[in-house]
Picture 1 (cartoon, rainbow over the protein chains, first blue to last red):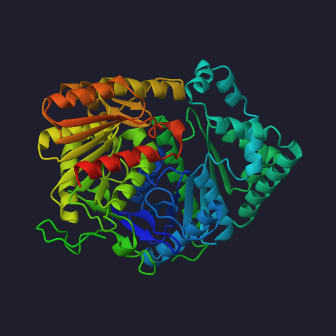
Picture 2 (cartoon, each protein chain N blue to C red):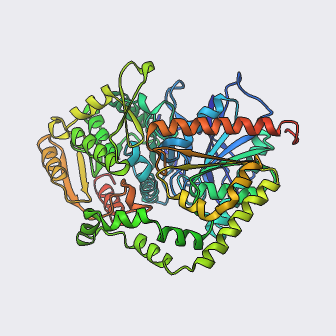
Picture 3 (cartoon, each protein chain N blue to C red):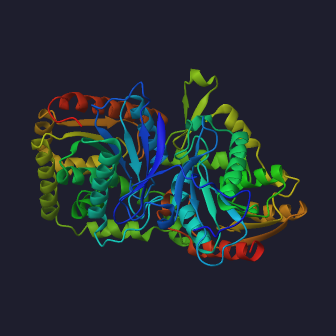
Length: 289
Length: 295
């Protein structure tokens, strides 16, 4: 296995690390994996998950890139004026262009946690080189929907109202008023509006299924993405799973960023199994670079 | 970019070991504000980012930035990067690097130990001197990075200045603090793992596997027991007005160092609930101090 720092990108210098498999495991038939930032956490990933995933997948023959979007981690500031979400999609496509040039990569699996998952999801809609997306604890597909679900999370309000530490925080100047304001604002989002946003997200999932894109959807038992998922899919989930393109997995005892070590190990096994499954399903179907 | 200097330490032209996109406007070291690269032993390479000095006031001192460790590394990375940027703008070349078993450096998370990290700080210092052409070194450490900086300075006896930003003064108290946060976040104690290949028990705390020997070594650390000066000039920055930091600054005076204590109320950038804040006042204060003592 070999790791190489790289710098690429059009509107900003984007910094990443390519992990190449050892020669004994290298295969030209495998898609390339790109790991996308979890929000503002830099490319090593929360709890170093991206590094561990990259090295594990390299040992299985996959070339992997983890990189920072502009303004995050070691990457520079972008000179364009795109909104953050659109810029992330554009920069993910730039990463694919770069890997095409330096590693001859033609097909890609995108993996991300939280916001990284949503970027992967959005990129899969825009770029036909993506054959699979791993969505780990995704929850920010739509601002309206996020506000609505966040405001109605009983677990959040319980942690605020029945935790003495939370009552002390305003007194010592450490209250998270922004977080509280976001939740309160969400209480005023109408149910019909949230349901409409949820239907749009569900339709986006169906569109990827129709395009033969493989999706791995992973939820941690202690993450509120589950509540989000119920809102988005409603009764449509069994049908999507029956398509064979959406693989839904739950990880017990795991939080949003897989802090317990056994949950990390389980996540790695899920990702490896899914990536190898996607590769075998797509073998011979798509042109191999 | 670097001001030209005649020195045996000057970096050879092939020093950077990163691939750059030839089509990109940022494709050379001259167009970027940092160079990512691997250095150190080929069997266990360390990942570093080198920030060349900017502007006309190129300083005669290179800064090596020592990150916090473990979960705090993840949270504080943004502040460290911005601090390096600011130091670079003030004319200092800066190298920040990941300890082995952390970030993008080689190694498994459970394999690191204090002696090894101290060796790696020395490796990073040599690399920073080679790249920058400077022989004078300042170490800047945040949290456990400050603790390691102090220990490295005591071993070396050659550091001109040191910034200790919210240092971990007592290893035992630090482990207890991490354990408490783990239990509060997850509602359960750190998990004990079966790891026959390591030959000793491993405990998972806040997503990181700690071997029993590493935990024992960490619990023994106490900066209030060091006898030699870690550097000639030391600034202890304290964001939360804590007794251990004040005591440390006083203790460092007894080692012969010229130490200063500065309390600047600011966000604890290494904590989960702080988000993406970068403490501008703290960064400005440490840059001003460095300009004063290591111009």
